[in-house]
Length: 427
Image (cartoon, rainbow, N blue to C red):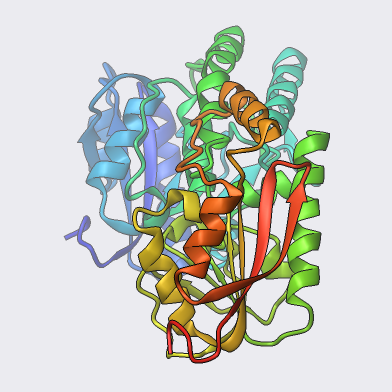
């Protein structure tokens, strides 16, 4: 069966009255797929064509799926939901996407979960009217900058998708803005995106269904909602983006915390970062083991030979007395049972080992002001349980730790260094 779970590659063509183009395009796609020597099939997503699109597609061996929902977004959602292949390649049916480029994208499939044929990277080009070329280039630059995504061509529909990257996407747009929506959600889930240069060609037959001005209006309307999703603290690369933020205070704060933690850890070799997220501490200290309960954060930070573990802070998969230092930075305020977490960390620490805990100090007016300001500008406003210095010292003291040192960032964020008592808790 062409749409079986064992299908390796599905080529997807959203179509509306493309019969003339399909008669020429489908044999060429089939020839390219035969050269790839992989289990593949062609699917036409028909948006209600009134010409011979459906008959032509069937005659050339493609499977036709009736589109659910409206517009380009409806076609893409239908394909993602109905086609069970490991890789899905979407392309236009008007010859603006040369079929041989399928090979170029497919050969790079192991480098990223989404591979984009891009007009807006070096050696890419779009043979389009000047007005459309200017608008396309400008919109893509604005979107990439505002959304913090290193992608030159966010609006290209010529893409290769791994099934894992699209399996659980919640797509809402019916317009071409679904292309940016896919990339934003993929970034937020920590999937890799790369671009392969290509030359966009004029369509062979018929008139384009796209309207340049409408494109611009639709994209700009979507930008606000996509920005909010992109800047959520749940986004896979949230901590990394903060470290390199264009906002001076945010960048300075992140790097001040980074320096304090780095100096406190020193050159110890057995270090655990609990709730690591996409912190740059993992890059600063390659000897560090990173733990997080969120798959997307770990997916974003994956590197060859890096040790990353998906686990809950209250139930760590490590032997007793495994680590010299454990870092718990900006995590405690988000856990349900802090006592359980501190005791688990004590179990994993060697006697005399050190625990570094960082959290906002709710007793300081500076943090109350900054927290209020943060709540105004941050999309999800997620601040969690508040702690003050006395409460934190008491929590650690009652669970086998002695406070060694304390530091503040701008008098608002407290970082405590605590040493596990020899013969104390966790032994």
